[in-house]
Every structure is written in structure tokens, then in C-alpha cells.
Amino acid sequence: MEDAIKLFKALSDASRVRIINSLIDAPKYVELLAERLELTPSTVSFHLKKLEDVGLVTKHKDQYYIIYEICNETLNQTLENLVKSTNSHVAIEDAREQEYRQKVIDTFFKFEKLKSIPVQRKKRMIILEKMVEAFKFDEIYTEKEVNIIIADFHDDFATLRRELINEKLMKRDNGIYQRIK
Amino acid sequence: MTLSTFIQNYKQTLTDEISNLNAQSEQLKIENRDDEYNFNRVENNIVEIFDQMFEISLKKIKDESNWKTELTTSYLSFFNKIPTAWHTNLEKCKVHGLEDEIFIETLKINKAETIKTMFLTMIEEEKI
Image 1 (tube, chains in turn blue, red):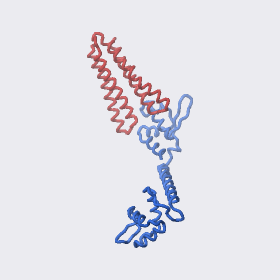
Image 2: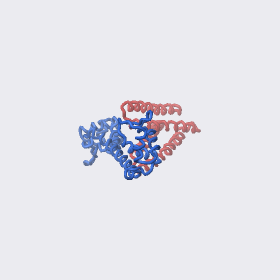
Image 3: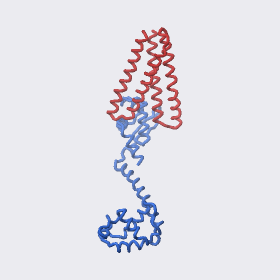
Image 4: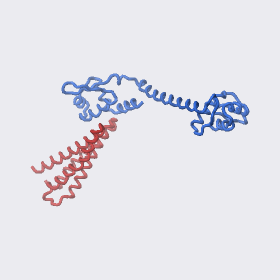
């Protein structure tokens, strides 16, 4: 993702876009670019360094000059490819989150029973979300039915029932409970 | 040429330079050439610094009959003193490979040198 952002930043300058356009025509050395684009050679060199850092241009020595040219591999990337590389970062974060959740579940559950109710809210939420899977959507439960289901996990069904309501995983209306979608 | 005429001419030169830089910076902003706009502002600051130093140097003149020597000595001392820090920064930036900072420090040093050359040229013309 950071590479994509650097690339976009490099392109968000009119002079650098003009340099790229000029190099698309043909490779050039600094002084020629400066002359064509009416910039000082030092300014051109500054911009070329930015473009080189993100892989948009490459350089090679040709007798007395250093010639710059477009790196087609970078320039021909589609916007979709650049954006996809951004999404892969999200996928990595999702995977890390899943790993953490599983670790919490493995720590607090033994043989499908809850060993203890976590003190930290984040961990407690993970446990509750695991427990609430025992309830079906679109089905209504009496308080007694809820207590029995929760008791399968842990003796303190009253606290856990209350937490399921507080964390908006279930709702209660006149003694009738339902899982929230 | 009298001191007052020289002051008028030199100040006008600096004012014109600042006006040019301001006009350029407006255009650079419109054209989304942000880096060059920033460079332009840096150069503008340098001109303004040495404009102020010129004012300070004028106040130090004790003997108006010897104004050229006194003014030159006083004013040039600022061109020796002020860029020292920029040269030091430039060397540090080179050591650390800070490309953007190298460019900016070099720009400042070069602009100061340009102003100094301009002043010396105008003072030389006075001696003819």
C-alpha cells in the first residue's frame, strides 16, 4: 500500500507528469529535458529522482550523458492492480484479526466449555460472539431457554445473558429473547 | 552616484526580484507544481533576508563620504555569516542522503550567491 501511495504522490505534480510525457516520446538526458520543458537542470534532476525512487524512470550512462527513460513495467500497471495491492494489506490485517480471535477462543474454551469470563472487554466480546452462535436468527427464546443454552458454556448464565444484551448481540422484549442480526 | 540613488536602485532590484518570484509562485500554484512552488518560496525568503540585511548595513554607515566601502564591508559580512549554517546543514544532509534537503540547502546557498554577485556588480558600476 505504501508503494502505491508513493507512486501516486510522485505523479501528483504537473512538472513530473510533463517529464514522463516527454520521456514516453523518447529517452532524454537532463539538459535536454530542461530545455524542452523550460525548467532548470537542477529542478529536472530533482523531479527525476522522485520518479526514479518510485520506479517510473530508470537511467543509464551513454558516453558523456546519463540518459533517463520510462520504466514501462511500472507505467503500464493498471489502476486496478495498484488498488488490489492496497486490498491485500486489508486481507493481511483481517487474517491477523482472525488469528487473534482464534487464540482467545482456544485460551478461554476447553471442550466447548468456557473456563472463565474474560475481564478485558475485547476478549469478552470475542467469547460472547462465539457463544451467541448457539442461538438461531429469527427464533425467539424464553429466558429459561436462554439460561439453559448459556449454562452449557458456563455456570454464570445470568452474567453472560446480561452481557449478550448489553453488547447488543441479543435483544430482550417482555421476557422474550432474540438474536440480533 | 550618491548613496541615496544607489539605495533606490538596489532596493528596486530586490523589489523587482521579489515581484517576479511572487508572480512565478502564483503561476506554479495554479499549475499544481507544488515542489517548484515551495522552492520559489524558499528563494523569496532568501531575497527578503538579504533585503533586511541591506537595511541593517545602511544603518551602520558612519561616514557617508566613505559609504561604498562601509556598506560593502558590512553587507558582505552577512553573506559570509548567514549561509554558514546552510553549508553545515548541506554537509549533514549529504551524509544522511536526504535528497530533498540537499536540494533546498543548495538552492538557498545559490540564491544568496546570486544576490551577492548582483550587489557587487552594482557597486562596481558605481566605481566606474
